[in-house]
Length: 118
Length: 106
Image (cartoon, rainbow over all chains, first blue to last red; front, side, top):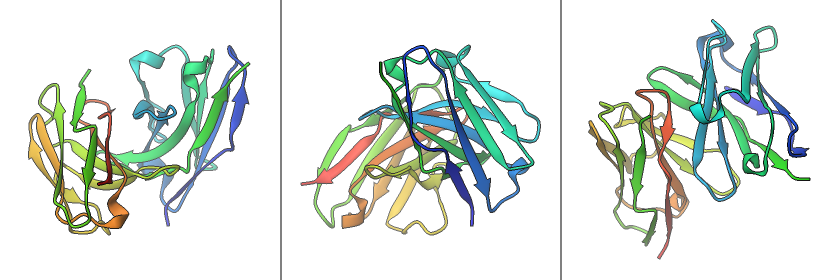
């Protein structure tokens, strides 16, 4: 079955960076895009960015451009997300999710809590 | 950027009620709309895509309709497992979620 498994919770200080991994299984990694979506406490879902494992092409939300990087490693079917220059506003649960055109975000990772605090 | 506006933000209902949630897009998105259900502490669950196509395994009491800028999610007879927060998602141009509708027990 399709599974997306994310790395564990993170506690970071303001100004630091965070790296989260999303290891996938149960499908052909290169045939689906991967998006990262976050959810601040008590808030709505926010799309952050997308990457094609096949081409490496990325698209980032305007609000995060310059701080956000996404990569993939096809040999391990894993996607990575790095967010830099963290502030308390970046405290959230971060999700990875796969998508393919007509069918968006049909499978999600379990989420990774990132807490930014001094 | 395309903005998505859901209403209501909170909905109180009883078991067996028919429930309707509305999602409006700031510009036409054709039928590039999906719906998700999220329970506390859990990742969202995919329900509907292309505005009205039910994902495999989703109960038939859920249905979606609409095109252009106005869309609805309907639960025909609310069940205990349906108390949750629901989000719409446009995916015509990048991806944008609505702000969510919490369905709570009346």
